[in-house]
Length: 95
Image 1 (cartoon, rainbow, N blue to C red):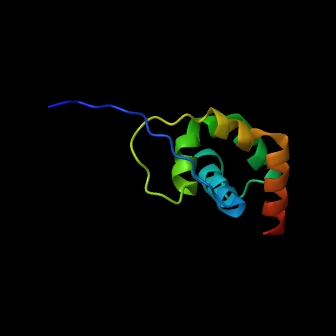
Image 2 (tube, rainbow, N blue to C red):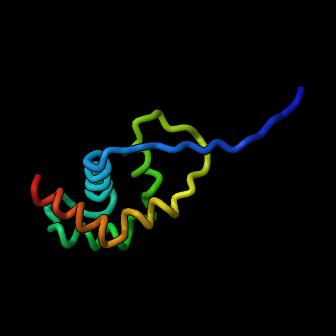
């Protein structure tokens, strides 16, 4: 028997609204509360989301999640950058 090991790379496209909803869900589930203001939410995301990136990916992904390591550095950078958080804030306030 031959034991083969390989690394799987998956590129996933996620609708912005889906990502925003998933981010808010993760915030309210693991970081803050439903009563927090948008400024508290943004601060909590910036300070804590790196601890919950795997959960965010699972919540936002349209696929059943497979086992394995997640390289979450790019995703963490995306959801904590000012431009993304401004769009998230507009989405939140218009909801």
